[in-house]
Length: 167
Image (cartoon, rainbow, N blue to C red; front, side):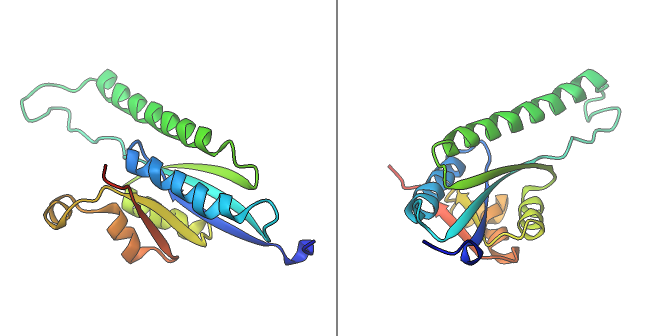
């Protein structure tokens, strides 16, 4: 039996969102990094689920067509964003519930996903950042940007990008 003092802690940050690629990356991480460690492993796993809510929209009192945005519209957009965050975290939590050999934490932050994920991985002392990839080609990445590419280049810890297999 391993000495309690010799047991190391692994802090794995998993970036989650509403995409199937994100969910696949979480499932892959649980199956290959957590489950394969097994109950007798010498590492305590802390899985930290990070969701980046987009910042609230900033509108001028008049939009481009001259219509006035009401407070109700802005409040409705913000409520939708909060509800989506709750839904994503609930789905991720349900996927994790069958793994008893780890502790699960949840962090919902507001901001650009690229910055939020890298900052949280550093702030939380991540040993590994796991994220999904939409599998955009070069052209789409050039125009849309890629959160996973950005994090792979800028995170202060190792980054594992899990690509969902094509069917």
